[in-house]
Image (cartoon, rainbow, N blue to C red):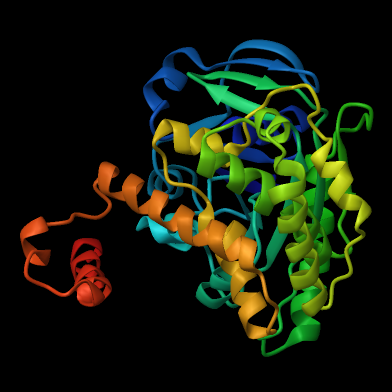
Length: 362
């Protein structure tokens, strides 16, 4: 009987450790999609320093491909896609587009190991007959030039995204329940001291809770280009972090989710003394696009729908939209011809820009 076929898309710190964990367990056949580091990985593999799995030099996944399409061509249909890429729907290429070649109707289960709210909705719309699962990981893993450092025990929380629009909810959730149990078994090491896979019975609440951290600390540090602790020294805890967290708690409540106010202190003190830079700040400093829409844009859509006032988050979002605009232009995602705007009223700029961006993306 053949083993389940698993495709890991995204070879950053989280994706590489996920591929390693699945490979070590020997319960499935693993393929890792590696883009920019493909040639290095093929020749030399990864050097891994993991608090979970130890030090491993020159490790290579069972199968490595440069694209999702190559993975399908060489290694056939997949039972699971573990998606660990950043989710940047405003960056030109969506996550749905990235994995589309590897999705087989009904067969392939899609597991989103990503930040943010509302990330499941476009997946469910594009692949209505495929189970979509959530996986929230607390692993502290980075990949720099194929040197992977994993600082926290591999612990994940896997659950089923709500799917209100499926025509046969009973059949869907029956399938989803079987798939979440199977994937947890695939990822769980036989020795639970090695890693720990938990069932997340309330995915919606878990994701809102993580946003208490991401919507405040990630966004503010990226906007001002300061690590968390320097922001705190400059009084950001009271002027920005806590007020922004309060707004997330209010928005979540309007969405039927009660978050404990004590969560604010947990996240504010999570890195005391470490002078660390959250992922959005790291992306900003590298000139890479940020996960702005899933961390701030989507929660603010919920706030608007439910008439929740969120002035701090709104200002952060609109300012970061301008920062994202700058990065998009630097990376060639958008192009601005200044001559097009010289004799146009500034109120008409958004319409002209939208038309130009649409032309580029097409």
